[in-house]
Length: 101
Image (cartoon, rainbow, N blue to C red; front, side, top):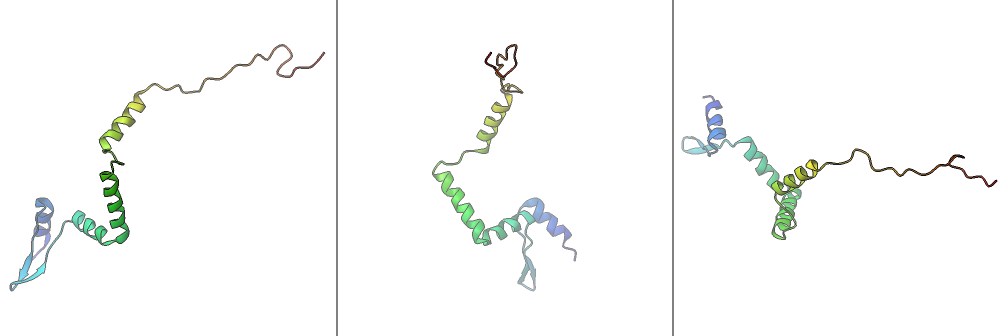
């Protein structure tokens, strides 16, 4: 039996499927994205980062990505001078150096 059809069904439907052999659960195909999420949660460093991120959200130290994008778009829309203003100094007839005559 080919596992291609059940694999596509699991991917498309985002549901679980358990294959049995003589009433024994043999395999449970999982979507690749879900497998990646599962493996990341097994890593203690990743779990700490997720916990810290959740703490930041609860403490309101984070904001939605939509708010950040809106701020960036507003900043981009503001006209900005290509060059900063340059001060022009009076050089005089003798150039920038003054000699005492």
